[in-house]
Length: 198
Image 1 (cartoon, rainbow, N blue to C red):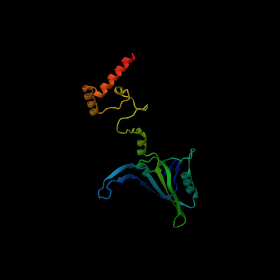
Image 2: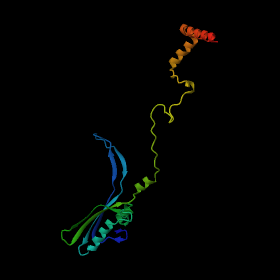
Image 3: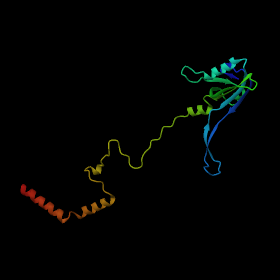
Image 4: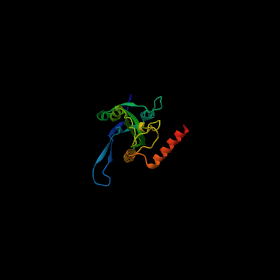
């Protein structure tokens, strides 16, 4: 196994690949098996090996790789060369989760285990290439009010309340019949007053 430019030193090296598939149960309390697919999480590799205690520099170098950060303070990304990684289409990785070291039973070996997580997985790249959707504008039901306030209707310029169809019908009948006797008397008196003033 090559992590970056470093050839991992040790014996009994084993690699376990993990692909996490995220699903959500839709069955509720029933016995149905319906699931909603939530996507694929980045793949990971769990690496275990033994390092001879007579060569502590091999363990020290691995820990230095795990602790390495770049100038921006972010974890270093390594190119990985390994048969299992190649089969799982993993090219770049970062150290993740626990890096554990314990003495083996014979006290001459360290049992080392660490996890490498895939950096920029294929599903992640596909998701980043997809155009972002603009949030849909919410519109309340009913007539929208313009920003400058309600506009007056051309047929209602004198600020009279808008009539319903039934009220408009009554108004037309009233106009067809003509003014009432009281209104006619008021108009006659107004006319006489105007004529006398002249």
